Image (tube, rainbow, N blue to C red):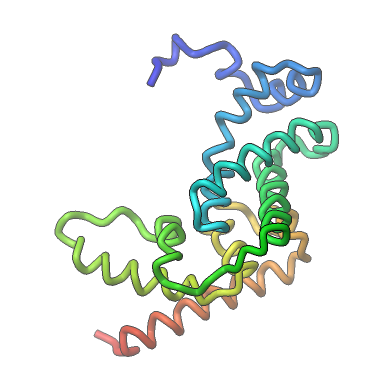
Length: 198
């Protein structure tokens, strides 16, 4: 990791300035935008594909498309959700073309757990492993779109309005789907735990 004084000047610029420069063809400005936003885009795609290689490829495709469409971004303050919207389209197109089937297998939900559970402490490691397995299985049973909406809220911290933009849904549908996702998770977890109270 480089110290702040060693960073390129572009790395310290505001997003609006970087966007304006990138729109005029400045590769350094777009590189900084890529470095800032690619980890979140990759994480979203990893959660969607459940495969790192596919997430790598789709992240590159997302930014290639974003570079060509910078002029279409109307609200510069919503760059993150705009990029996630492009990533979602890349995922859906890739799944259609390659015939990817999203399984409900608990093992394939491992990447989803990291978005919801904190890193376990050494003392709680055994208990956390069991909890992670239960949560992974519960998340794996959610419909892909409902799971994506929930993770955009929990993992990426997007407001409902931006999730609506990413998913192409109405605001009431976003709130309804996330509410239903949370209820489904609670029901599945309660069923596994036994539904008992301390």
